[in-house]
Image 1 (cartoon, rainbow, N blue to C red):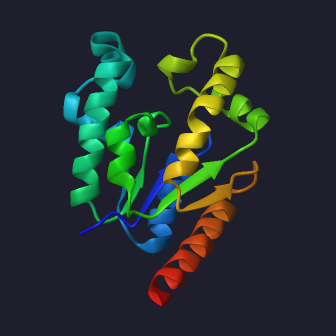
Image 2 (cartoon, rainbow, N blue to C red; image 1 turned 90 degrees about the vertical axis):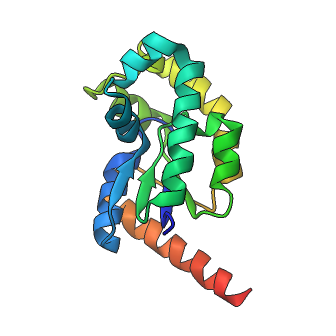
Length: 176
C-alpha cells in the first residue's frame, strides 16, 4: 500500500475539493490530513491550536501524515502548513507530490468567502496569505514532483491537469 498522490499548496487552492475529485476519478479513497487530525484527537483544528499551539499541532500533524503515507492507498491532501515540518518534507520524498498553485487574488477571495475557520488567517487574511506564500512556496516547490495551476476555473480541469502530469511522471519513471 502506498499513497498514489499527495496534494500540497496554500490554503484556498482547492486541495480538498480537487483531491476528492481526483480520488473519485482514480477510483481510490481520499483522505485529508486536517480531517484525520480532527478524527484522531476529537478536537477541531482551532481547538488544537488553542490547546497546544502551532508547534504542538505541527508535531501531531507530522506524525499523522507519516503514518498515513505508510498505510493509505489513495489520494492524500495535506494542510497548507504541513510542509513546514522537516520530518514531513523528508517523509514525502519518493511519493508523487502535486503542488497546486493559484493567483493571490483567487486565494484571498476563496479564504475570505469560506466558512472554514483558519487560525493563522483570522487577522488580515490578505496580508497573512502573502506572508505565508513567501515562507511556504519554496518548501512546496522543494517537495513537489509536479505543479499545476488552479486558475479559478473548474476543479475538474485541475484534476485533468494533475492526471496528465502524473501520467508524464509515471512514464518517465518507467523509462529509468
